[in-house]
Image 1 (cartoon, rainbow, N blue to C red):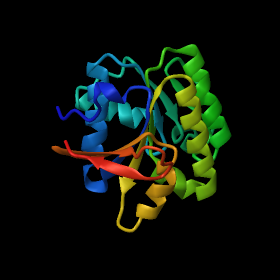
Image 2 (tube, rainbow, N blue to C red):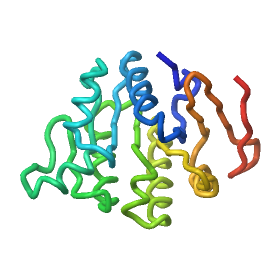
Image 3 (tube, one colour):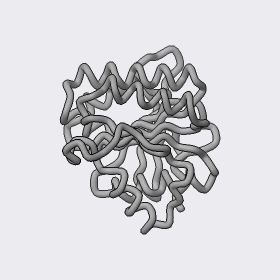
Length: 202
């Protein structure tokens, strides 16, 4: 298994950049690593339903015992047939409901011992919301995670020509990890700089 995160990356806000064609492989590797290290995870899905993810991870032999879901898809396509929440999943009305999403995330953090927060993905949220609203959402979430001494992982799909957009979100991160198995690049903030990152050679 390709190890995406190291022990030194705890209690940080990380933007994990993934090439679109390697998205599924990298996300599965990330979850497999966290599960193998017995970490509890709050996984926010804006792309797939919880049932679709559970099926996919079961096929990949990834245990979901310690994964708690914020599902932003199921309720909007169920025509009122899905309840607000159950023991493992909080259902959000739709990907536009950022306030509802934020409340559900930190309600889960209050009720469960969560080690890692994973947002999948920034790009999908941008389809349903204005850029400034997602910037505010990521800023607020990253701040709350830092305050609670948690690790936040914000997934960002790399696309040609969206480098400036990534730069805007990087101001809220401690580190950017470019995941391109089996090669990994890391970028950390330069000393006394808000938006400038430098690459670490691994």
